[in-house]
Length: 386
Image 1 (cartoon, rainbow, N blue to C red):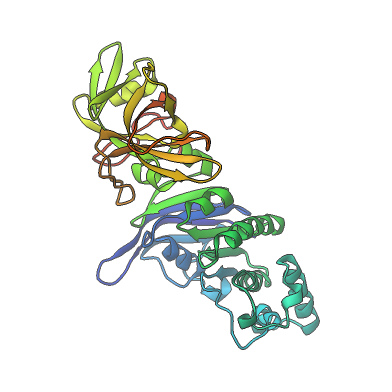
Image 2 (image 1 turned 45 degrees about the vertical axis):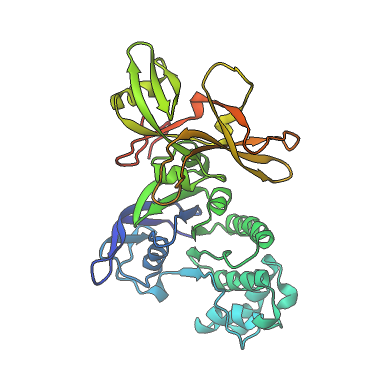
């Protein structure tokens, strides 16, 4: 296998459309990195440049420590798996898997051995005589992945390979792909818009928006310490609640965050209070995930906001409760637009809030996030390095 690096890579299409802008990213030998972002953010364009199907407008693609910009796609040792399976309908599964070996002039005995080996790894050994039309969606994707891996690629590129499958198949194949990649020591670049796939599969994730790399790191790090409001809103289900807050500094005491007609105090000893204090007299965005919220008893003290239950979402094992606290919602790049400021908290299934009733929501101050409304960047210490 081999390492992959992008060095200040940009891709500009004729007419001036910028698909990728100054992206630098390293993928270690044997690492599984997921490129995450909405449609049109540049994920697939990056895969195409690594594969050699598209030449960067500027910057360099490096494979195994060697600049590969002038290396043709067929010589890069890269395999690619697509969203639509891309199997030849007139060939059997065995012949589909063996097609790259035929092109490479592989000996017949070795070909049969390698097909059987990779088919066994993907649990499709009993399907080798079938044609794609006789397979389920999951079986077709396994066959496509087997074909990509059979020739022993240096790098495996995967472009939303599970998006056409139902939820049950996606869940099972996520685990299979990760397990197989690790057992074979594959270097993987995986593209998805599904943040659950990214967080459950990746060694590291790289979050893109409009061709720009906004954040990268281990999944739990990016989730707990998002670099931007866009990243914060994109990761997590349900998404982070983002509310507008007016900052008022009470020197040597606390920073008051006025959220709608209510307020929450951030104690001065909290290191984040010093950073938020720079926005005295201005509005910022305050972010809260469901794990930072819990129901508060009537008259409870501390950082509590009260509001009206607007929506209940029952999931069997839990209920999600949307509470309108009368604040202004914040839009993060079209991902998180709310008519009013709502907090979403989880409650046990035996807790039965009533639509329209007034409830209290306790905020865990240590788990709140703060963002600059002008540039979307995180306010305060990150807790990790880019």
